Figure 1 (cartoon, helix red, strand yellow):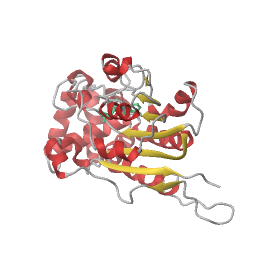
Figure 2 (tube, helix red, strand yellow):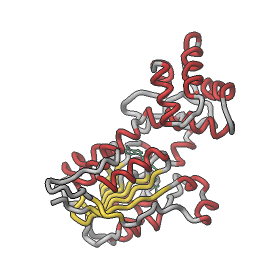
Figure 3 (cartoon, helix red, strand yellow):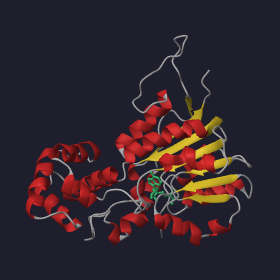
Length: 307
Ligand SMILES: C[S@@+](CC[C@H](N)C(=O)[O-])C[C@H]1O[C@@H](n2cnc3c(N)ncnc32)[C@H](O)[C@@H]1O
C-alpha cells in the first residue's frame, strides 16, 4: 500500500466538485484523493496533480490515471503551482478547487534508502525531489550551531535544541554525518521525555528544512488565491502546528502571519470565507484505523474577490 489517505471524504466533499471544473491536487502521493476527485469529475473537467517525488510520478504512471484524458501529472514542487498550471493553458482565476495534503507519504517513510525514517539505517538524504537541493547530511555537516538550533527548536519543537545543535557540531569534527544511525545515536544520548517522540521530532525538523516545507507552503498559498476562481475552494490538510497556523492565518487574513489589512475605506480585507469555522479533525474510528491521521487538521476556505 503506497499511502492511506487521510480525511479523504471530508476533504473531497469540502471541494464541492462541479462537473467540468478544473481542480488541482497539489500532493498526489498514492493518488487516493486524486482518484476520488476524478471519480467525481466522471470523465469531465480536468485534474492537475502535483508531486515533486519521482516515486509518486511512477505511481501515477503505473495506475489507471495515466490513461485518463482528464488527468495531468505535474512533476514539480507545488510552490510553482501558478507557472505550471498557466503553462497548461489555465488562466489565473480558472481553477475551481485546490487540495493539499501536506508532508510525507507512508511510501516515503517506508522506503529505507530515502533516509526519512529513524527505523532504518540509510544515507541521510530526506529530499522529496531527488533531482535537486541539499540533503539532511549536508545540513548536519554544514549548518552553524545557531542554524541547527533554529531547525531543531522551531521546526521540531525539540526542547534542548541548543544542546543538540552543539552536539552535532562536536560530532562532525571527527565524524561527518552520512547515515541515519549517527543521528539516532545522538538522539539516544540527548533525548528528553519520550525517546521515540524525540527521534521523530529531530527527523521531522530535518525533513522540513531539507524540503523547505514552510517556504513552499507560503508560495503555494499565495499562488492558490491567484489561480482560484471567485467562490473557488482551497482545502489544506496539515500535520504540523506551524503549517496549520500558517493556513489558519492565511484563510483569516490573506497572509500567513495573520496580519489584518484594511482597504482604502478602512474595512478589514477578508479574501476568504471560512467554509468551516474550526479545523476538521479525523474521527476516532479513522485514527484507530490509521494512526498517522492523528495530528491532521483540515481547513477549508472559499475565495472572495476583494473590491
Ligand atoms: C501526505 S502525501 C499525499 C497523499 C495523497 N493525498 C494520497 O491520498 O495518497 C504528501 C505527498 O506530497 C508530496 N509533496 C510534499 N510537499 C510537496 C511540494 N512542496 N511539492 C510537491 N509535492 C509535495 C510528497 O512527495 C508526498 O508524495
